[in-house]
Length: 584
Image 1 (tube, helix red, strand yellow):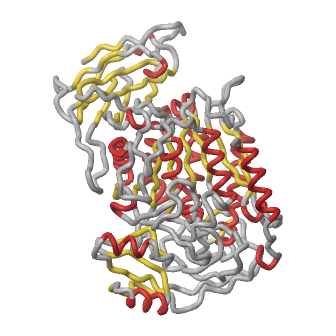
Image 2 (cartoon, helix red, strand yellow; image 1 turned 90 degrees about the vertical axis):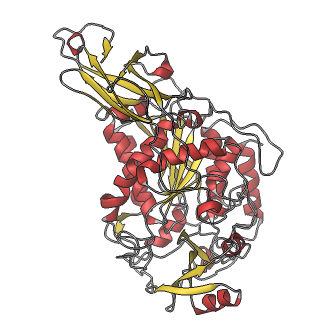
Image 3 (cartoon, helix red, strand yellow; image 1 turned 90 degrees about the horizontal axis):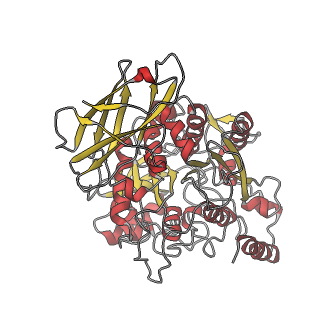
């Protein structure tokens, strides 16, 4: 079924269903009542963890070594105790007052609104049409149902846009690998959209300035969705300096559930995806925070998101009748995605809905541990290090299309840049200053690593990483290459291998057929998992600025991703020369 026909059927279903009233489309939401707590709920067995994840309560995306965190009142507390859980109150939550005036352009000391994110993408595309294009890929639940407060679903493509090509086209047949970063599928998770904002700026402002960004945009496409759930985020904004803790979308058709920290209307979009839908990690109760929806992809936000992914990425994993699938995507698979959430300090990869390993489990683990090297987060599958969750986006993108997919849970649960300074007492809304002091510097290089690995994530993540590369004014190229650049937290950390080769390419990267030149180990032999390699460049025969690509290989023959570095020539006349590099 093509996307247009599927959408027509969706619209027919919506239009023939009982239409929600204006009161449901714009429900009067009560303030969060007093008497709410963050509860430590201790689990001693995997079965208890699964039971809690399936309870429909507001189980947070953070945990301790032997407990999960749940938002609830005394009724929830007593219910959990009656079910046999040991429960301890970690802290009381502050009541949230509803904002009566129109929301400000920014709220809570700096966080940007949905309107600002839309304007930001439009401004980037207008200022740099050679690099950016905005795509309207669908409509939110409120807009589909005729509410004037509904939103377009908007993404931005950032790449060096070449004339007469498929650059930024909604067509999976492209010669550039694609990486997609998405944020705010859970509306109350404020940090995620701010990181997406900074990532967009890093890409556009870094082109032709930073060699890594320049090489990335010359040969890859970056896609960003800063607000996947705009209706829900608009509800969050109504709280002003005390953001409302709306998690789900604003589907009001089943009726009004009110709005508390643990019971609200809408559908959890990160339990509504088609792969793994309907398992033990979601709820069938309308007002629960993990309500999965009436059927897979029932929500416009999820339906259109899946359609966008199909338009951007080829289906590279063979059809597989087994449940869960057992046939892996090929090691040559291209494409990658990150779904940003908060909080918990996790890198989570498929599967989320089952403890069975994914067909590409080893490759996904290598890829995820490469990313957590930069942010230091705990790394594993959701059942391994958090709890079972079904119908989640990264299970769908990996399970359906084969692309490398993960969730980042950004930020600690407590302490500095956690719950301290939050008006709600939760790390969903940390002080805005934490975006630049902690979260962005912590994750910027992890985003860049994921974007570079999207060329062939399963193959390239097996090889070593070039941590640094510089060319001095004397023409000496120095590169630090590491196969041990892996996160240190999480089960089954991948093994490291000895580095055996380091190569450099002038102007034409290895995947485009560039000519390699070997670098020499500075200590005389390649025999460890981390090496300093060097070479001499005759910059006197080069005119102007050039780009140099450096990559390493391990003892198993795996090449890692290339790192780009500028080379400044000193020749007085501009002629065409090949780069003479002599290993030192």
